[in-house]
Image 1 (cartoon, rainbow, N blue to C red):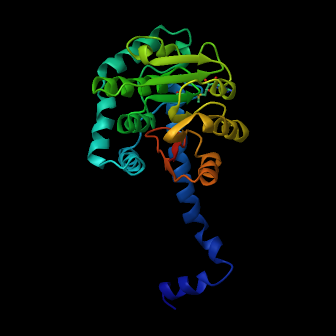
Image 2 (image 1 turned 90 degrees about the horizontal axis):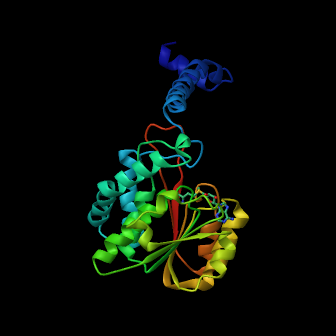
Image 3 (image 1 turned 60 degrees about the vertical axis):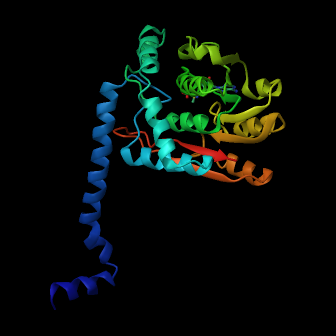
Amino acid sequence: MDAVKLRRALARTRLARVAAFPKRLATVARHDAKVLRVSARWLVASREHHNYTYELTKLSRSHLAWFVSVVCDLPVKQVREYLTEIESDDELRRHIASATAAAVRRGLADKQVRYARRIGWYAIVRARRPRHIVETGVDKGLGSCVLAAALLRNAAEGHPGRLSSIDINPEAGYLARTAPWSEVIDLIIGDSVESIGVLDRPVDLFLHDSDHSRGHERREFEAVEPKLARGAMLLTDNVMHTNVLANHAERTGRRFLAYRETPANHWYPGDGIGVAW
Ligand SMILES: C[S@@+](CC[C@H](N)C(=O)[O-])C[C@H]1O[C@@H](n2cnc3c(N)ncnc32)[C@H](O)[C@@H]1O
């Protein structure tokens, strides 16, 4: 019996998985060694302990452009220009780098300025020109600055807007307290569901990025529903962990789509952007 015939005969028996074990082990070991290498490098080089920052892989950035193009019904070329716009905003980069270096929590923040999927938030704001954005969950204020940068560009083109950024932690948002970005941001300290309940302006774009428990995410979307302007768009940063926004979209007759980001050179598997519109 030749080798091919022997392999085929073996594949039909219970011994097949034993024979394949060395090859399978080598594949898993190669994969795990890569994860270990990246993790070890990160443990030494990074200071972050949550809300990690990273660049997207080239492919993931390209898919993000197409994702925004579909949900905003805009040519992908235009979306790519928006992505490049925020990535080459040197004034914002300098501000984030210097505010991070001066911050009380600087020992737990990296010096490099990396936006990950937030460049997609930027492109969505540039595309839709909302008059009022609500972001729940601010942390350092990186996302708030990115959203504010988009609002400032929109304003320069004759489409002004404001951002209500809500966080329960009074120390949140230290990056978002500097002009010109702070001029379009209303930083609200309090529980997000309670704070949404007292909003007094219609909301054009809503982003959930606070307490990522299923119940809290659901309560935020329920609380914001009566506050929404006609045709408002809902985003969630929690789309890799729950189906809350998809369920909300189904209940309220909206479309839903999810993008999964892939971080470059990072052990973290990444988050995503869920959109209902
Ligand atoms: C993932 S971080 C926000 C990240 C931020 N959007 C960004 O772009 O970097 C989550 C934040 O939600 C806040 N948070 C947790 N529970 C909350 C609640 N019930 N209401 C408002 N904010 C809350 C936390 O204090 C934390 O700063």
